[in-house]
Image 1 (cartoon, rainbow, N blue to C red):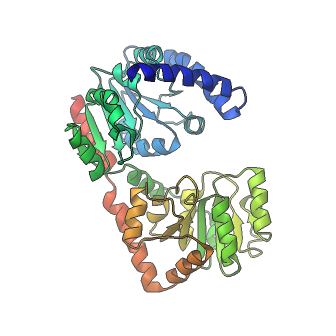
Image 2: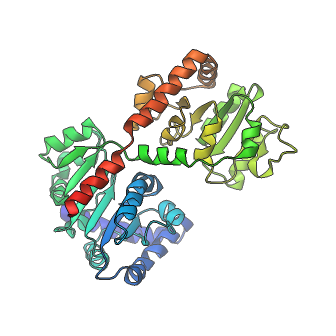
Image 3: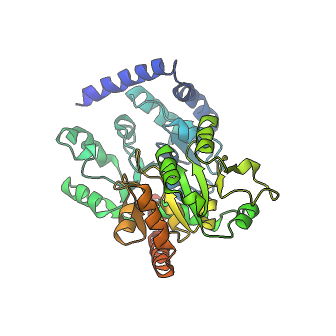
Length: 405
């Protein structure tokens, strides 16, 4: 199986290079990986003490962000090397101020892995959540290696009978910081005792975001009534809102996942009397019940202004970040594809969130939230859940510091 993996990695790399000729996003990634070697040579030197943090994409970056910032504050003589696999992570965070060096991770060939480790020369390596790369792990023997916010569900490939060869590489890890009891069961089943259940570091990040949420005066003035917010919405979510007719009864903020011109035109077609945030002024503030946010970076701060929230993605690959709304004590609802997210499952089971399947369900949710007692109960469940689960990054930081001494 190990031989097949090596062959697959080379074939996958070749196919990626071909696909890059026709896809701009992949082309950006391929070009970026070619620059990795020069960036490492320029910014990392032999005498540097390096913490290497690897994230697949932007979501994993957010899980590791608080940990990196704590490390930088307390170990200022170290350099932080941040690597991404996906362009959606690298292109957004390539200038992240806490990292001394940000690069794409080259494909997991033996040659690339050895060259990367030799140039980076990390004293500590941290992989976030799902990231396991066979050859990179192999060349990290003798280095302190940690897995942060690991979660292994029962359908994960590491559970499979054919993954024994890959699981053997897990012995390289110094310690695993895992999210839940299911993952602990996996660790115990395969004889991996070097783990601690610390929970999900995303709680720390959303709490940090809530503390630093910006004020948006024009939105604050407009939100003089109970407002529903659609966060990270897709077409299916937006069509469901249209079918609910709620925009005729209350104010709604729509923060679409995609803000290109074609999608904004789609939204304007659904809601003809809506206003784009970029056009929103004091003079036209009373002219609409629907605002479409056509800029990035405001989503997490906007949740503070809504009464309740609909988190998008539940009729596609999966819901987006429920915690961003929950940390403000906002009751949430979402579509049916949510069970991969522990926080969503918990909130549904404890009446802090509601699953919706139709426009009728959305109306019922909103009407229920207009009941003061139901609203306050759901709000309390959401805020207490976030507050009760923060602190994982500090626990991990303390463990890493102790292990380094």
